[in-house]
Length: 163
Picture 1: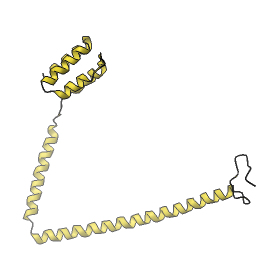
Picture 2: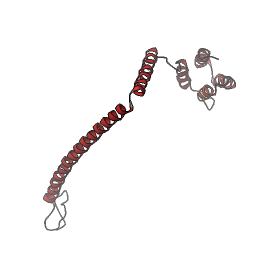
Picture 3: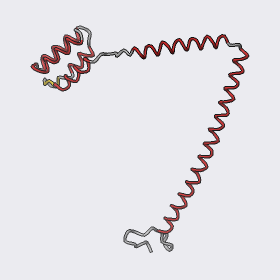
Picture 4: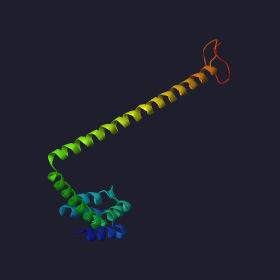
């Protein structure tokens, strides 16, 4: 059975069929080797009752094409393949000394970048550390202001402390 035939039969079962019709379709699909579809149809039957919503969702799922072909994407992939092959051919034609020089330049640029990142991260850490200290001092001052100086307890909501 093809997708269209299965979809039409499912629509008939949804409109006028019962659980036994869905189970019969599941058996036929299983015999043909479409076990994944057979399982989905079988799941629409629970304790002898047909769940038409599940069956309708399955019909919509199989009605959609499995793979949507994008010809533009295929063209771009072919262009990328040609570009990569040309780049590899140019790389192979480059003398070894030139490749070594280019690799050394790239390595140096990467090291400079890493140094800049490390410096930036250190500066950010310093700023965050200072902000954290300021926040902790403010929080400690707020707690000290609330704490009784005689019994060192924070007064209850009524204003009574442990003194």
